[in-house]
Image (tube, rainbow, N blue to C red; front, side, top):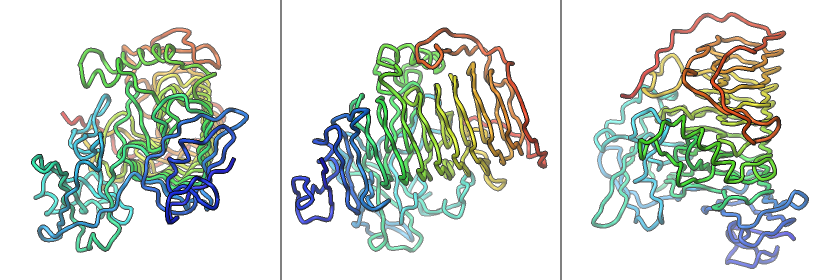
Length: 501
């Protein structure tokens, strides 16, 4: 059956071509295996929560009628700004707009977050460009350049928020540098996700040709619920293709972990376990919660344009096993440098078991591809990576990560890295074992060989399965370099790790 959606129709219909729904989520409530949801061009300010799963032989397909014509956004336009002082305007938003999740009272923080926890998940956008969060109204008025930004000329556009408890309102100040926010397209993000099932196990869904943008996503470390603007939420067989995905506060696409109330940010919230032990727990608990080849993973992420997200383009622990990530253009990730921690990259995958990442073009990211833990049967092939490095003019963020094209960390292999072009100053960070580097053009340094492996023991799995075979420390070695071309570039400056504390 075909179900039709058109936000520009005069009134809500029943999903027929003659009387389409106005909201994609109305179609998502009724779509059954084999159905196709055809979405007309327009801006859909809603959260799409698919209720029913498709089947391997009868997928549920959501398709933009016009490629990139249908926009699913987590933001709302605000046109109630009043002048405050100099170039700064102010608006008030009733907290009822946010429901049970207010991005302007929620901080970006959690396990493996190393920068100062002073940024909200909320954000203000001027003509689709994110503004930088200030620490006070005075800082917003001064509008000074943020020294860590990779785009310093944009960093003087500031915003600041506070709560009016008496009126139950969110107050937002913003410096638009002479622009009239009531005439320009000024939006604030209000929803946590754009297209992601609220429950696990809603598999075999195709999302094709949409713009997905401006969600107030949260920090997504490996032992926590990992949200993204769009993602399968611990299910099997999704296809996300030909989409433009941008301006997520944290992650663009999440192939990550479900919410486990007994293992969620426990180091940050309870200080009872190290984050590394929590990751080991997550692997074992995942087995109990259905982490099997038959139930989770095997997704296809292809031909997407993913950019201007501040944690990662594609992230995920365990939920992305057996997936193919191909032909994506991933760029300008974490360039604002407002966030810092160990989960930031163009692609950041934990437990990328039998995952193929091929023919992706990744550039201007803090890190290109980061395969953390259990890169077993992982293949990185035919990718082009360049300019994944901090510009010389940008100050190093305290709590920020090192930059390189590829980082493989604390796994046991086998990991195959072949036929890639690595053009950044640092090509490979190598703190693992069992890697084969074959037929690559390597124009940067190999950094931190063996760093960060002491006292860390990680799992390895039955071949081509998720079932745990055992745990082992990182012994190093069993690495092979065959037929690579190394080009000596002028050495960059030594990197100094800067902790916020």
